[in-house]
Length: 449
Image 1 (tube, helix red, strand yellow):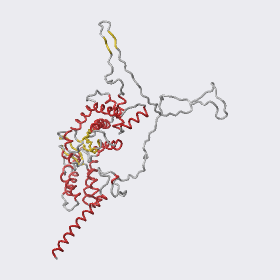
Image 2: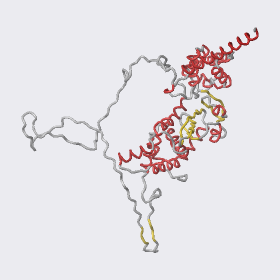
Image 3: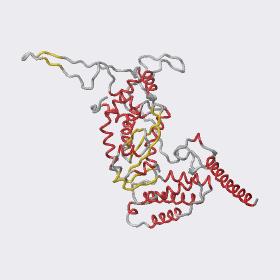
Image 4: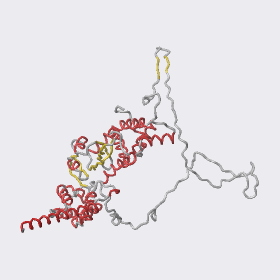
């Protein structure tokens, strides 16, 4: 009897432990899964509440602030057209004005309009003649870009690419826009061929961007999911302050990185999230994104009431703030303040976490494993504490998915990636996007269409 009672009590204790873990798990699902983590949309938030907001109020009203210098449209000194509004009779007595009436300019206003956009058809004619001296026939050459008897001009190719890759419009909406606004009837097949041709013309610039990124002091890397003809695929981005390189692949594995950068980044500090494939990449050093880590810590605070998470988040927060105050001289030699952050971090990672929730245990193990990649930004002037630059560089793919839903093929996804890399690089270098695409349209084709 005593043995049975003892076994029953043991089972009860075990069930109590299981119930405790399940309650913690439920609490995490209700309160810990939030859209401010990088992979959860706001529509899937559990226990949504407006009580907590990490953003702090500036205390200022929305809109223009006192002292803000406004801007307004300025009148043109040389308008393209002048419309004179001359009175014909007196508004007071009704007397009709005649040719001897002297009118003085009283007021003028200007409006800016877009004239009707009509396609302009340019016919190129080649002429020939027979030489009177030798009798040979000479025929003039037509411009080399003219391949078909009738084709669309380079500015139309630039516009189609601008609408598709920069403004994210799907082919059917580009087709409607060109028909309604310009009277142009392009098929979706023609639009695809234009994008394909522009991608081929962009290859030299695309490869040059890749080479620049590969030897950068600091490189940011990220990836995001896309849909390709109903299947899951990925966009990878590798970027710095001046260049953005994007590629499409079906795989999210380390192999996708190796296929692009076989030697990794041996001369670079690689800023990334905690994806295993990213962490496996060969680099000079790494910096884990603290923005990601602090979002996770905030979840642990809310779900588990973890004081440890609060303390670690405070260390990261203070380190990020200190980074903003550092000068280039602060990175040379031994910095006492940086040493203090290192010591505080080490103390927090040396705790006994065996009794913590499994999710928190996994998080701490990940930090211990990547201990040398947490405060790298305090040792390099150019290295940021977060991966926000890469997230901005890859965000265009999500916008494209929301508007266009998916890519019809992996080839088209890569055409988009090539052109988008050139566009984003031009933006980082303060260049006009449409001018950049116009330059591309005028490049000689270096790849088969």
